[in-house]
Image (cartoon, rainbow, N blue to C red; front, side, top):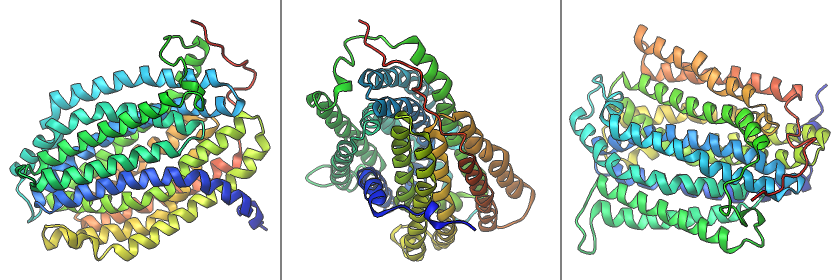
Length: 470
């Protein structure tokens, strides 16, 4: 018989988890709420404007997740170094992140500047009564030409925020998100629709507002971190030397690179998934955009729980308390599952009403409502999957998480979606339901991985604290 005590923690346990999760949740919620308002404001302009911006943001999603993978890889070592009390190790991880981000950023600029039109056109297909494809392409190009430059401050914001979280300082990234939120919302209202003598700039206004908000977030984090070096010791001397111990570089590359590759390939797979759906017409693209906007606003519940799990277990493993990490893992995954259930409730309630906000067709609104309901009932599975993914990743089992995440996406979900879209007359809603149903299998795989316990490894074991060598 299964004991519930194994999966349910004490009041003190949940107090500790929630105290760590709330600032991460607040920052993610603010970021996603900013995107929601941005999306709704652009959506008031029309279907083509909304679809153009959503396609560009889908392309940016690949970059964002690749960057997230790199930050996660360095944060993995930062969290365990902090758990061991090794500030030099955290500093080296931060320094590595700064270097590793540059080629990712350069590659993104090369692709978007050189192949932007072709990448956007992958999502533009006839097949519905909704939308002008040529006009959608024009708006997408307008948005991309400016929003692209926001990737630079965004990159360094993520590096600083990831390092701060790895040492348990989650409030300052939340504050930066609040600053970005207010800057973006105010500038959106002024620049998209025109005010105070400024002409209405439409999607160009939205892109300008986004870039300025990204700069504001980055400036706050940089200034805050460097002006609080006594409380944040890893930042002291972070740029006084370029030195990183070869042993740590090797470890990060071995353990961290699979995370970067995983997130990049996962984002590519998600983009291919959306592209497969887009073959059924622009109405599907628009409906998916509306669905993702609302879903992202509530998926932060279990996404933030996952980020907290990585930090909590990283600190425990870094202190070499392996058995405690295994005990806590079951409770933390259950916590992520309940976060997914809460997201399910909110999404199901809002599904009939949220699409009405957009200035689009009844065809798009009807599809969006149905898609949101599917996402709602998938959320508990997504919650547990997030929990198990971050649990296994906390011990450095990045190859296993690669196959669990990207492997499952490319071997199961993407082939299934293309097969159903291209080879059957199945309505797009039933295609979406069929692909989403595969999450049941992935949840079971995650449960097995956590139960096996082989993920619980102290990456810093048998290593002396790394000392700065200048």
